[in-house]
Length: 74
Image (cartoon, rainbow, N blue to C red):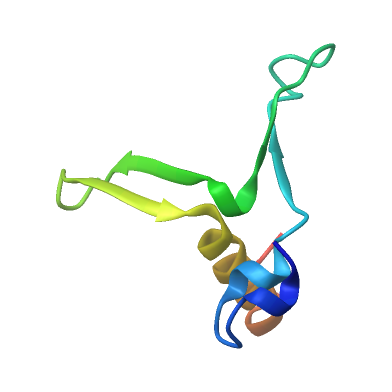
């Protein structure tokens, strides 16, 4: 999908070419997935409910935190 296809507030336009890889677990034949087609599913430790979030949104939060709180991100 081209970057022009995304709306101006959609962070996925910035992660269109990003991938997820498992090269740490399998360095010889890593599997890859497109970030924009991936979600993280986890159990929220506060509510004990299953949550799901797009990986592109996690990247947006990380980038915003790095820019806004340079001293707290290592």
